[in-house]
Length: 178
Image (cartoon, rainbow, N blue to C red; front, side, top):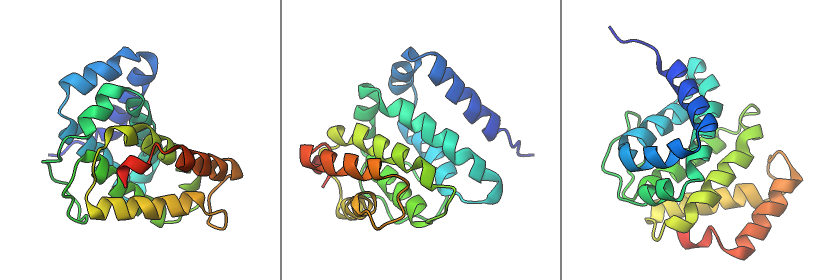
């Protein structure tokens, strides 16, 4: 019988990462990133009603982990795992998979997702300096995300995000991804 305990485990992991910042580096060095990120991204990608409440904690976990350079370096390794959902074939690294999943979530264009657009952008901003190349599919989806985040006519929650995306694009932290 399958136990449905992923929700409490995600919340426990979030609380542990918030209370103990040193745990981020330990996790980056000792946890299989393919398994961890595939699991987190699967939960984020899965839009069934009972998992919708998990999107925000999962994004918070990814945001906390993306602040650690060791974690970001581990994401730039080739992705060898598989996702239990139908995604476009990911031929790159975990950052590419992250972009594909974020692109899907943002294209849902649902009202309840809009408040966490800032966190999506922050995660992409944090991991982009560690990605030295991306396949065409991931790079195209990243350009589409930049269009969503930087276009003031799109349904982005705040004008502040629009200004930050424009400034960040000029500074170039996401450009190594393209």
